[in-house]
Image (cartoon, rainbow, N blue to C red; front, side, top):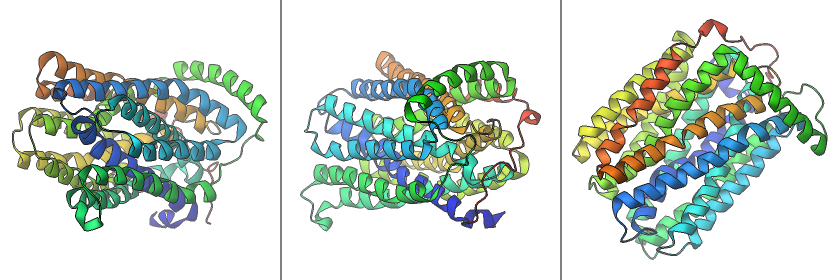
Amino acid sequence: MVKVLTRKPVVAWAMYDWANSAFATTVMAGFFPLFFKQYWNEGVAATESTFRLGATSAATSLIVALMAPVIGAIADKGGARIRLLALFTVLGAAMTAALVLVRQGDWQLAALLYGAASIGFWGGNQFYDSLLTDVAAGPEYDLVSGYGYALGYLGGGLLFAVNALMVSQPALFGIAGTAAAVKLSFLSVAVWWLLFALPAVLVVREARGAPPLPPRVAIAAGLAELRRTFGAVRESRPLLLFLLAYWFYIDGVNTIIKMAVDYGLALGFRQASLIQALLLVQFVGFPAALAFGWLGARIGARAGILVALAVYALVTLYAYRLDSEREFFVLAIVIGCVQGGVQSLSRSFYGRLVPAGKAGEFFGFYNMMGKAAAILGPMLAGSVALVSGDSRLAMLSIALLFVIGGGLLLRVPVAGQRAAGGARARREG
């Protein structure tokens, strides 16, 4: 099985996770929440800036949720998943680079550019996820999916480590100050993202079913197919239950990723300690994602996801009570152990449910459910913080998402998964 990870298309596909994880770490989880609160919202109450950050994330998620299944269906009919992967990558990288130009106090422009960059990130992820079924066969999904997340943690962590050093010691790099260092970090993410996305765009190929249609015909055919897919999802109990479960629990995961730094700031922890905790998550996440890929191949993806969700539910309880930076580091280690696992096993579990030849379309639904739910999580945490004035209660409220999601996942019949096998591309490169 390990030979799978050396195949050229598999390596090229996994390198996209290495590429775009720089945005997830340096921007989404790291410096954007810090800079948004301290630079672009200078002088604003912590609970209000938390609400603004949550509202920005929720609005972005709504846009992604509405467009994901539509562009997925059109991409399948037009054979355009690779081209759309490239398009969203360029959008995300360009908007990230544009954050360099935003002046202090201009939180509206910062939110707008961050939202556009996030659309590029999540839109690209949709097509990256769907290409799993083109580079691997069904029995390989858990291992290959975990491999992608592992490289993502390593690549994102390496650049974030350099960026953290730039911000903590700007003079070492000949940079004028901390603010300039943060902005240059955003620029480095854009360059990293574009550079390391090239292998996926140039090497990975879609497994061909029917011949691709011309753009105008593909749009009409894709929209017609989308209507049929809605019916297919409603009629497939395993698909419907899994998507509902995923809707809840992945929202909890993404909300913790987006709001963890904001939570630490609200508790009065030092910025340097929060950055170190994020780095810890990345480097713990690298071996943990590989381990979960191995675990899923042995006990089943659903069982592995449930283990991770149980840990996440306990994490929110622990977060509610923590009151020291040392405890925040413990929290970071635990999250690092399960974060990549729940993400990678969810992708591989769903990949087995997807009908052959419809990966872009059905992974559009996958992303739609995740992003539609992500409207709830950030708004839930932000609203609880704003109304109660207590950031601890905001973090505790996320536990509900894991409980509901885990309960629904238990009802997904494992035997109903399609053994996706011989139809998948298995190029040796």
